Image 1 (tube, rainbow, N blue to C red):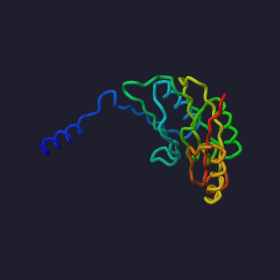
Image 2 (spheres, rainbow, N blue to C red):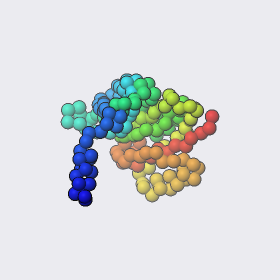
Image 3 (cartoon, helix red, strand yellow):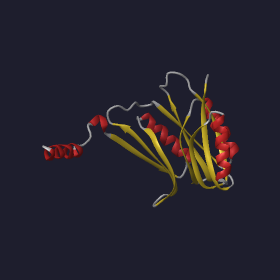
Image 4 (cartoon, rainbow, N blue to C red):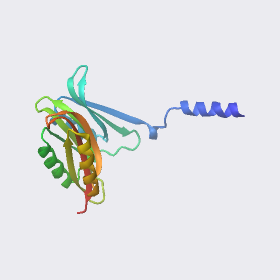
Length: 191
């Protein structure tokens, strides 16, 4: 009986996923941040949702930003999401752009450091807007950047005490100030 049960379990694990459990993927890669935002929104119109962003060197494209998008084969909702890509090499610029997007309801999705074709080394953040959210949600963002992890610990704790939640970070050489730890925090604000 035990052997039959094991064979049944092994066979069921080898069965392909049902159509409602299957995924389609789209990989986007470019050297221009403006092109990436356009391609993200084209993917969203086709029912895809952004999963992850990576910046770095690729074999054929040189320094590129690469985004993976996905959708379920059975239940994708075209146009549900919209994307905003922010890229800056100054903390003050990125902080302002995050605040503006947060007031529009854009939620943090992911970030990377990217050596863009025109801007040099930049922090790139991708934000997502859920167009089908019933109530309008707004966000307040805080960007922290420092070269010392002990300083980051202190600044994160201070922001946490004010209700900010850590949503993402990068460690890399940036134009912000050399090799830095860059953290982004968020808190929801009521309308």
